[in-house]
Length: 125
Image (cartoon, rainbow, N blue to C red; front, side, top):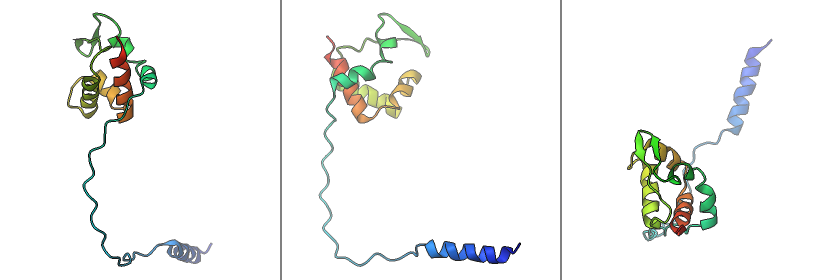
């Protein structure tokens, strides 16, 4: 076996595919873009929100239910304000509000998920 020629061939192969660092071509600087306005909140889809709240109903759909993390009265959230629901879920997602079950649930939600959930729950009368 001839390891030196194999190693040399491998080194040549690697250098052939290596991209050398280059300075970007000089261009005239474009004016800095204006500060972007904050994005408008996502519009919630009630039908999609209904599907996303499947696991929520296990605790929030039972009158007087208390869960075990620790024993905590679970509020009824149907008919609650959409703004309140968005804020609450966002705060659970970021850890500003502390509750292990809610934090675990909210961490997986996107902004669109939160908008859809809030739209559905606020539509319940």
